[in-house]
Image (cartoon, rainbow, N blue to C red; front, side, top):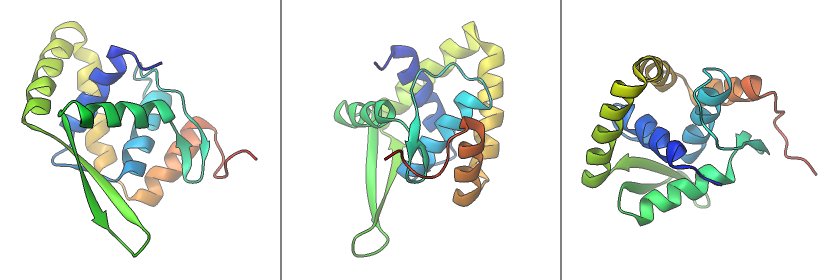
Length: 146
């Protein structure tokens, strides 16, 4: 079950990106890395999937934020059958991000400092490196269970 804390941290991670989060796979892997490597208190459960760790709960949270008008999903066609879904905060989402940031600074200053540093580093990584790191941090192999 998705907790309010998980939604707040998801909003914070998306908001800490310089612009949009490029790709559903990227946000999945970044949240997994933040949970397993950086010990951010994220409650989303991850299981092994085609490109490493995947959370149905995280996908549901993204869909909920889109439906609530807090997050915008843009589709970028890569190939005839392949699309990339990019995420950015809407105006209302940015307002919520600022509230979440203020709350985190007040009650969890060390967490927000570490989160800023981690997101900044993750943004600079290539997708193959992000995927490899997520697999390593979570201990999951690349293939979903049969």
